Length: 274
Image 1 (cartoon, rainbow, N blue to C red):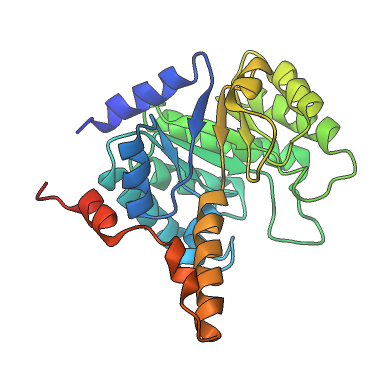
Image 2: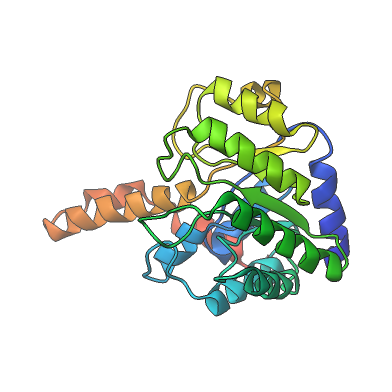
C-alpha cells in the first residue's frame, strides 16, 4: 500500500497538467469499488456521509467527519480529497485546529468553503473568508505542507445576485491567500467555467458535475479545467434506487428489486479470499 506521503505526491502530480475525474464515494464499499475501476484519486462527500448517518448535509459533527476521513484513507490505496465544509469552526483559530486534525487523518487534500450555517447570511464576508483560508494554509504548512488546500466559493449554490463575478473575486483572493486549487460549485455554463479558469490561472480549477450534461470530460479539459468531481451525485443515485424499490415494496410489489446488482458480483468484489 502506498504511504501517505506517496499518495500526497501523486495527488499533487495529478493537478500539474491535464484533466482528471475525481468521483465522490459515500462509504468504504463505494470507495473500494471506484478504486477497483481505476480512478486515480477519490473525494469524500459531506452530503453522502450525512445521509448515510441519517443527517442533513451540514449536521454531521466534526469528530464523525474526521472518523470518516480516517476510515476512507485506511480503506483505499489512492489519494483522498476531503470535503471539509467550512472547517467546522466559528473563527479562524478554530479552522486552523480543525485543519490540523484533518491533515492527521492522512487525506491528500481538503476543501474549505466560504458558506456559513446562517441562512440569512449564507456567505462569510470576503475578508473573513480569506482569513479562514490563510488559517488553513498555516495549519497545513505547519504539518509539512504536502496536503493540497482547495478553496471553495459557494456563490452559485447560495443564490448570489452576481455569482460569477463574486466567485471570481473570492477565488482570486483565496489563491493569493495560499489555496492550491480553486472551486466554485454550481458553475455550469461554459462561459462561466472558462472565466473562472482564466481568472485564477495558472492554479488548477475543480468543476462540479452533479447532474446529466452534454459536456464531456474532454469538453471540460478544453476549457482548462484540471479536475471534475460529482459531489453527492453517486449517493443520490444509490438513494434513488433505494427509494424507488422501497416505494414498490410499500405497494406490495417486488419489481423494483430487478434493478439491483447481482449478489455474486458484489460478494466477489469484496471477498478478501480471492
